[in-house]
Each structure stands twice: as structure tokens, then as C-alpha cells.
Length: 195
Image 1 (cartoon, rainbow, N blue to C red):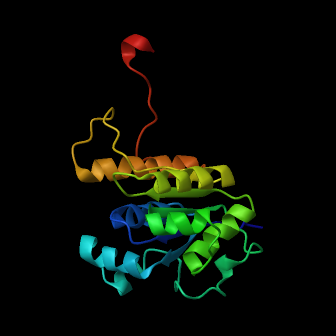
Image 2 (image 1 turned 60 degrees about the vertical axis):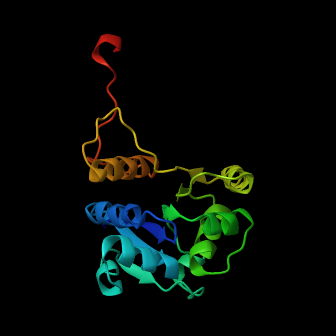
């Protein structure tokens, strides 16, 4: 019998950087063994439209299932719905704070809470700068709870030439953290004279 697909939840919320969520969903779409479940906040939809020119019907085709943000009775709101993890890309400071304090007040934060309570992988791509102490404390709190805070910061050792190169590198790191094979960015092989 064929094995069941790995389910991965992707959240997109109101921080700038909707391209990270879009590109992650596109990359996951290329992996046949992965089934994607997206949940997008109202501000996330606004940023997908404003930053990328995507309308709801276009963005909704990126995932296998798109769950409404207010549908707290959705499958991803239950620990009995097995997933390989969840990524919130980008992650706003509001969503980070809600997760840090266990406020499952919408499907996005409820699904993240479920992933943490079931000891599954939760990866957050926070997009804010500069950071104040409350942001930093919330990052510490979610890390102590088991989440991985993975800011999408540029890596210049691969000599990116475009914004797309920079985004692609961040998505490659996320796929690595999920334990998925990826061809977006090669593993660092070292500098020849030091290898």
C-alpha cells in the first residue's frame, strides 16, 4: 500500500514578506509526498495582494487545502490530525505573541498551539525590525516551548544576485529544518583552502 503523504501546515500572517509563504507553498507543491494545508490571516491576504498582486482565488490554489482563519473546527485544529509540522511564513509579532501565550484565538494560532502540544515541529519566520524586549522575550518563550525561530535573514556566502535568490535560500533552510530534500540551495561545502 502507498504511504500517506506528509501533511505540512503553512500559515501566512500580516508581517511583510508574504513572498516567503508563497514560495514555500510552491516549493512544497513540487514534493509529491507532501500535502499542504494553508491558513492565512486577513492581514496575510492583504499582504499577498499588496506585495505580490495575488488575489484570493490565485493564492488559494497554492495549497492542497486552504482553511478559513475563523474555522477553529477545521481538521488542523486537532492533534488527532497528524502532521509533519507547521511553518508560519512570515510570522507577525502579533501571531508570535499569541503563540507564546497560548492564545488560540483563530485557526492559525490554534493550529500552532496544537503542533506544539503534540511535540511536532513548528518553524516561525518572524519579520520585524528593530526588535523590542517584548518581541525577544516572546521568541525565547516559543523556543522554550519547542518552536524554531528562523528569521528570514539574507545569507551572502552563496552570492545572491536577486531578491529571489535571497528568498529561495530562506525557503531552502526551512525545507532543511522540515527534513525534506531540496534543490533550492546547495549545502555549504566550505571554502576550498579550508576544506
